[in-house]
Image (cartoon, rainbow, N blue to C red; front, side, top):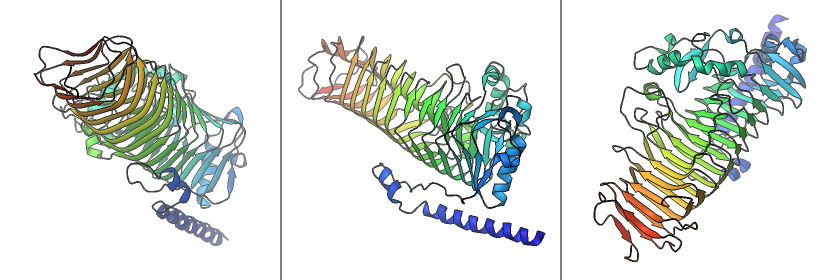
Length: 528
């Protein structure tokens, strides 16, 4: 009898494995719906098909789970997942109710479905998240407390349903104040030659928080419909993953929830994000690729990523790149998003010592309002991170294109900040309209084209350039009666070309500082 049962399970496993392999292979083939969604992106990207699961359901109630908000259901959830995996995969159902649990660990071919009316409340006792697991924490590999939902080396997985995951993060957020020593040790680990298997944390003294949901080295992934809230740290963390769909998820973290990023894509590729809503205490959607020396060692970029139809209210940034750029970020397309009340709208940040960089990025059809700081900022001189490197290797930002963007209200319209040894280059702005306290400020930038850019500052010049070259400003205008249109500084500034701009509302066209070389500016009509 046992032999028959064993062969039955083995046969189901083989069938599902073959089915999964077929689904994986189809990811590179044509699918009408996905081709239509991704038809006009500006780089080659394989079609991403969502995972498919056997039509069998494993209700956690059948494995002893009790939805009273008090009973610990960690074992019941693990038992349901194990039974589902042993049977070849399917749906693990969390029905309506309030389910208290410790960490949930995935297996391949599992769809964890949290039904409408269900809330999963995670324990805030750190001991429940031991033993430690392999993770990537702020761009550095180590071992730490388990994330609340954790999947490693899984194929064909999903988290779906209209229920809620509640991280109950209030006690975890207090750890922010006491984690400094362990964080610095982690940042220095690669430089100091500490191998990954010796970077072991998972203690209250170290106080290193784990992401709420972390998928690491997984393939064929779907995240759909659920709400996640009160995350202890980053909320949805996708690391080293391939072929990922994120659709219609909601992320709710209060403003005082430190480092509670909504969705972090970390050295992952072939990702399609649609209709995400975020109201969080840090960055809403952030693209990363490893930190400093450890990021160079791993050397895995984030690439082939499409983000569209997202809505962000509050948070540090609507769409953010970095500051972990050491593995490189490339082939990113963002469109049709709204950023309302964020600290910054579009943000790219890195610093000396990171290396890597950001390239081949297209961002278009974005609406912003009530932005606290910068509407658009590309900053290679980021100084807010304590994760300094022992190297001076600069990052490289180039081939970045922004068009059809509006912003009603910001402190600063556009900031471009390169490094003297590594200029920001090959940047285009097209059809941009921004009202802000201050205009565009650029330093150490090269080969920048601004076409039909209308910036209306409350004070100061419309555009200020320092040590920057090869700018084309074509069809620009400003409706607010600024004192100066263009303010030039720096002995390295040159080849600034003005073409067919409407400066009728500006009192002074150009202001040149004494250190600007003669002939630095060229006007289409020869008049300045």
